[in-house]
Image 1 (cartoon, rainbow, N blue to C red):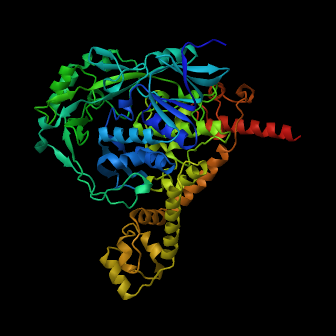
Image 2 (cartoon, rainbow, N blue to C red):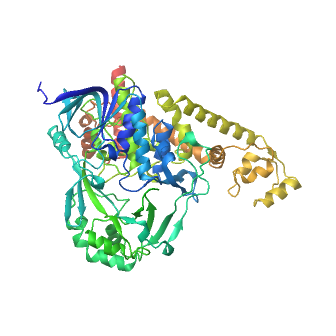
Image 3 (cartoon, one colour):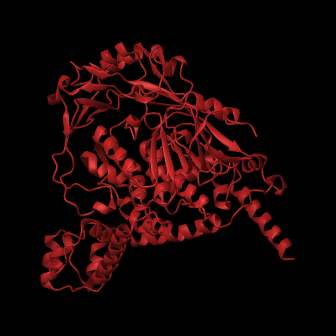
Length: 633
């Protein structure tokens, strides 16, 4: 065995490389499940850095935050301590797409999470640059840092974010750098390549930060927070938040700004060919918007505060890789920014990512035992996607070490399951972002019921506290009681009741009904029918929402549950990793190649592999049945 140069700095059960949103959730999960854990980060000052947008949640992403919380993760609790504005999105639509999005105080978010890590028993937080992963006989054994420190470990989770071989682009200027001017990780990529890893380049970007005092807000539309603040964590449901929310502002680009961009496109590395990495489709730069939506006369721009202790504003919607002088000229043609002063210019950043199809749904490498990957190194974008992966990787590191069954969430159980299944099955040719449209069963995977769906799973793992478990059980029981009670409240078609029904905007009754059935009417709500139910107990908003949603969507939910049962049948048909798909009669050539490469864990996962058709799945099922009969005989 080759002797590694260096010195043994410590021995741990779990080593986490990186302390971004993935690394923190991974480290906390491992430590809380009893593992002696070390989290190594290049800078203690960059823990959970909100290097791009200063907010948590949003469409689809808010679902992930609630699911992380239900499983015992930390993200929701941390943002509830440090938010400065809260808004529930998509409230004019159905409950399946309601998503909470809150503005964060960037500095406070970092400080609070760092304190949580420092105070966590079993967790050691250490600054150091990891330059190599130690592997023996296809088993990870530890990591090595740039200073020669060797940390021995039973499991390693790599969550390097956008730091891995990071390169910043501002016009013709290229800088070897991580986000926000932090040092990049340059040596780990080479070490992993020596072990056979192949990387693809990914790209993301961020807008300029501008000085608040240089902005003319009178030309913009104020965007206040919601009057009723709804927390992210289920542990805080019902809590009253007496804070002064900081407003955001909406403004627009102008044709002059568009012309400046068009005239300087050749100086943008996105268009000059200097950037090789694939950019995020659903978070385009301002250059992309002008090119791809050339017919639009203006684009929305949001001014978002970065915190209570700074004058920096984030210019949402105006990320760019143009030269700094061009950026400044263009920004000055955004309404209200005519006298704008930059505090930080916009930039694009390229970084290394692996092909996530190398991973199982536990996020463990298929060939190197106990080596996990989580976050943007897997080709995803966003804090929330990273945190969700970190949590799952941390849990499964503990499950492996403790000799327990792997923890896997499928597509019918959670958005986390959708996210992980998508990337390990289909890969990521561009930074992957979760969206409600990606979930086939989104009516049952709502953000408001994440605790009812997942708290039991977290409790069974040992990650959910007794307090959290009891809160979820009480909520579940309260909803059940209220549904039963409403179903047993008769509403007769008498004069008094019909007068009340007219007064609340609905038609009169001709036959007896129940309050449960009345709430099904589109024009009525649980709250508006209280006049017919004067003795009704005042329930928490979260319970009222559950009751109303389950009543109004009862038929649709029942149909979706039938679909989920059908889905489960295919998911439960497990496939051996040793299965040679070349032996499956009548499979298409593409299907054989893809299935042999990806080695899906179930027939359900096989059906979602790009290039595998329904007829291929039928052939596979026939083959499996034939093999089963051979074994029986």
